[in-house]
Length: 320
Image (cartoon, rainbow, N blue to C red; front, side):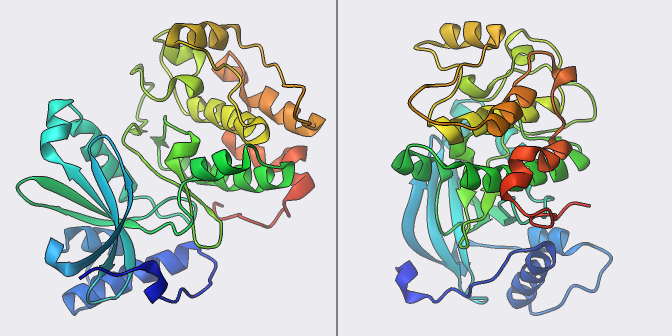
């Protein structure tokens, strides 16, 4: 049965942790017919639920990637809209990405934050793996950035505080994202940021040395093969803010080698055709720093003058 988004009426509400937990509880209860009274968390119960493709009505395609497709879907019992991500086993085995998929499921399923895309559960058949994801109604941030070319300072500040808060939450859970970029950020129904794609993420029990991520966002220590830690996400947020404000990345090169050379020089130059204020430039300068030790911590971003100028202090404070 095919359906369209227009056949549903969305209730306007502000996401917060309790609402997401309630959603998981109801999703689990209406699927199984029983409430969660065990010592297991609602997250664990939802993940262990035996889903099949027959539990969903499939709608329009939302996107496609290297290893599969993403569809709008409705869970038949609960009537919830979700994004159903189909991953082809043959493709991930062909490219050796089994570990990334396992990591995405393992890490994203345990993260419960209003600015992180929720993974409700997963199942698989002979050919495919299916991820049941929160539906981000406004799509990719990348598409919005392309359409608008760049964002004004107020919009950028609101986006930055939400993402910094989400990453601070990840870091408290000992998770490094390692692939922050507009393509990996979605927009919820009310315009809220939704950090997604945790395939390159790691549980940071120690410093890492694996090269990963997108060239424009990779910090110097990863280019040189040195160990890295949570500060790689701070660097990426600085690059992201620059791209928000200008519509381009600061170290873009025609080749990977050229980008690497520019990153190692770490000289930030601002285009003359876009007006950027001194507070915004200062925040970028404090994040895009060659030495990881000298970078501003993600937790401190919310208190920077560029953020406090536009965003009320009590807004988006989901992590204590």
